[in-house]
Structures are given as structure tokens and as C-alpha cells.
Image (cartoon, rainbow, N blue to C red; front, side, top):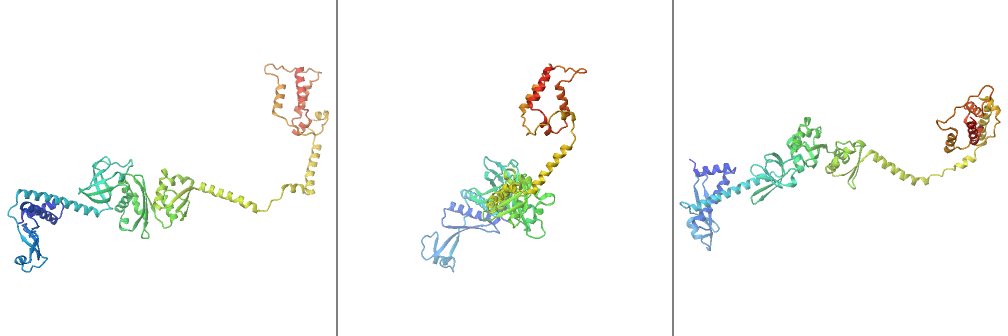
Amino acid sequence: MKNEFLIAITQIAAEKNLPKEVVLQAVETALISAYKKDSEATGNIVVRIDRNTGNVHVYAQRAVVEEVEDPRVDISLEEAHRVKPDAQLGDIIENEMTPANAGRIAAQTAKQVVLQRLREAEREMVYEEFSNREGDIVSGVIQRVDARQVIVDLGKTEGILPPTEQVRAAAEHYRPGLRMKFYLMEVHKAARGPQLILSRTHKNLLKRLFELEVPEIYKGVVEIKAIAREPGYRSKVAVFAQQPGVDPVGSCVGLRGIRIQNIVNELNGERIDVVQWDPDPARFVANALSPAQVAGVSTSEEDNTASVMVPDRQLSLAIGKEGQNARLAAKLTGWRIDIKSESAVQELRLAAVVEEAPAEAPAEAPAPEPSAEVIEAPAETLATEVAPTEEAAVAEEAAPEPVAVAVAEEVPAAPAKPQIRFAEDLVGVVTAASPPKGKRAKARKPSKGEEPPPAAKAKKIKKARRPVLEEELEEEEPGPDESDYSESSSSEET
């Protein structure tokens, strides 16, 4: 039958989730303190508990020396031979001095020491467990939310989520009782036990979530080359397949996007772009600007800059909201990215061509003066130009006149240059000729035998001369002063 003492130790080990040996060592340390307290014994005291029977034995240890300085710690060689015949200098001689009964004070001291040792053993176990998981994902329940930090219950211990590692996006809220996954950043010892620092903004949190959801990444078939993240808003992940024939982007997205959707749900709706990594920097930069389409990329390794040309309709998509897409692409690739539209690139090229053109112009041969060509024109061309004008004049003379009466009465005037008329002159003539409205007198019709007034003749002549060319009309018509005078006189007579 087992001793009740061993049964109690086994039960404590099970409750505290500690090895049985650790509990026994804690009890032995407690009994040493209790024995020293009760018997006021000094020196090296050792307590051993029999693992099978549970019996407790107390021993006093002394070292074998030639000259004894402190009898509580040292023992001479002669005395050592009495206890142990083959004892030599430097050996440890143990003398059993187990007390019959322990007092109340010794029992209370043993209890306190046992509890303290058990707590220390628990903390040490927790520290060893979580120190091996540093850089991994842990799942916990939010216990309480303080003014600055969030306390998370991890089961055996508590973790701290500092303000710098909290996502400040509107989509993520920390409420007591909410279970979430956290990235374990640091584990270090403190006065009250191990202190665990958690994070929700670290980029490796995204990497560990991909390893949980994508078996190809966990097995090493698909490798995550780079991650750029703005917590709570958007992230970009560059992946590369180690085996030929494997689609790295499709492996991460999954059938109908179920794999990537689980990660997005865990991050409370954070957008994730999965792009393919390429050893060529130009192609990698073009892939990193996804979902925008890139027309061309030119890289400069001297200043680590990549100039990207995109279509005009894709410029805003390539830059992103507040430059987010371009900023994440620069973090992902490690290159400085300069994005320009196709129209802007063409304008720059045209400007460069225009700047180079004046420098090349003086090298060309001087052009001939245009005046020399006009002066040295051949006589044959002049003859051909004069001949059509003469033929046109003959044709005009041979053509029948439209109104024979009017032309016969008037003497042809000498050809004169066409006069320039201004708008003010024409307006004045019209206003002087037309009488005011309402007071206009009706024109009297001439009776039989009477001659029509000269104004009527002029009107008839004007009607008959309407088909005549404008140039002839200007030559044959009287000057503006005479026509005005004739029209005004006719109006007075009427």
C-alpha cells in the first residue's frame, strides 16, 4: 500500500501540471528549512524522501579534512574511519539525524516553502514552454482591456498586448471574452513570473497564418520571399515555387479563394495581395504593382530606382489610395518606384527632342533666299501667265451684255481701283435713305403719258444690273455721294 504522503505529492503534481520529481524536490527543500527552524541545526543538512515508501530521512554532511576548523562542517580522518573505514581526505560523511516529530512552527514553515517552490517551478515550466515558441502564433482570450494595454489569457499564463502592437484600424476591436490569434514576440523573466509580449501588427503574423492555412508553404514547396504590411488595411506577399509545375499564387489563394479568405477573416478584413516573386527586378516590380497593369519598367542599380510606365487609365490604380499600393510595392521589392503615365512619358520624350533640335540646326547648309527665285524667273513662265489674262479679256468682250438699254446709255468709265467702304459709311447711307417708320408717304403712281421720276429709273437700273459681276458693278456705279444725293432728291419730290 502506498504511503499517503506519496499520494498527496502525486495529486499536487497532477493539479499543477508539474512532473512528480519536481514536486518531491520542492518538498525536500521545504523540509530542510523546517528542520533547521525547529532544531536550530546549522551546517549542511540534506533531506531525502524514499520514492517507493515515502519515508523521510535527514542527514548532516561533513567534509573529511586533516585539521578541523568547524566541527559542524568538518570531520577528522580518524572520526571518518569510524563511520566509513575506507574514507579519504575530501570525502563527504553523512550522519543521519532524523527528528522524531516536527513542531507546529516547523510544519508551517515547510508548508510555505513548499508553496513557494511550487510556484517557482510553475513559472520555470511556463518560461521554458513559451521561450521555445517565441516567434510563433499563440491563441488566447482577451481577459481585460486597460487604458493602454490588453491582457490576454493564454491558459497557463497571461500575455500583454502593448499599444504599439495593436491594430488601430476601425475594423478591429478588442473586447473581453474575444478569442484571437497573436504573434509571440518576446518572452523574458520578471518578478511575478515570465512576461509574454504579444503582437497583432507584426508581418510574421501573416507569414505564420499562411503556414497554417497553406500546406505547400508549411512543407516548403512554396516559399514566402517577402512581406509588406500596413496592419488593418492592406498587405502584399511575394511567393515563389521551389518545384516546377506548382502555381505559387494559386496554392495560396486556394479553391474559390477559401484559403486566403480564412486569413482575411482572422485579420478582420485586411486586404491581401499575393504576387509572384521573380529574380528579374523589372518583372518583380511589375508584379508587385498588381492589380495595376504595367506597360514597361526600367531599373537603375546606381540609385536603386525603378521607373514604371503605366497606361493613363491605370495610373490611379497603380498609385493606390493615398499612395498605398506604390508604397507597399516599394517595401516589398526594396526599390524606389517612380510611376508615370504613357502620355507624361511621351511629353518628356518630345521635350527632349525639341531641346536637341536647336543644337543640330547650325550644322545644316544655309537655305537659298526666296527673293532670288522671284527675280530670276524665266520668260516662258511670264508668257504663260499673261496669255490666260488676254484670253479672259477677249471672252468678256464677246459675251452678251445682260441689259442692253442701261449699258448703251452710260459711258464706260475708266478702270479704277476698288474703293474700301467702312461699316459707318454704309450705316449712314441706309439711315439717310430710309424714312422713319409711321411717317413714310406712299409713292404716287405716274399716269399715262407722264415720265417716271429719276428715282424710279435708278431703281429699274439697279434691278437690271443685279446679275452683273461685282467688279463691273463697282466700276460702273456712281460714287456714294451721287447715289445718296439722287435718292434724297427723289424722296423730297415725292
